[in-house]
Length: 182
Image (tube, rainbow, N blue to C red):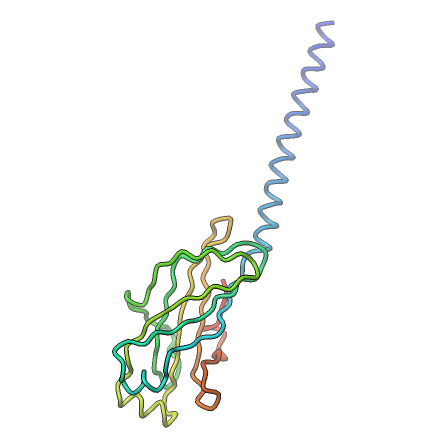
């Protein structure tokens, strides 16, 4: 009888070990599924209050907004936004942001939800305004979103918008180095 009880105990221990192992495998598969359904952030509707007053230097500070759209299958936790206005003849190899361009935030975006972020700019000097109006240089808004997913993995999305005078709005730049999701 003791041998039978010992045998049953060993079988029970073996079943517990199998259950623990299967639970670990299921947990790992759940993490893979969640990473496959990770959030993807895109930027839409980049606007500033008045392009003309910004470029003419009529205001000391101009406020703009953009929408952050979350797609994918899990939440995005945006913790920092960097955004800046630039006047370039052509896009540089690397954009240098200043510390004042960085805004700490705490935005939680579930899948399929828009969030709005504000940003501020100083006016552009008149010499640059003239070159922008003559289309010798472009007026760009460049930025980065720093966020994490539900697994705590940090990610970055970059964006670049060029002002189109005919359409009177900022449009995405046709350069994948400046428009990316990571």
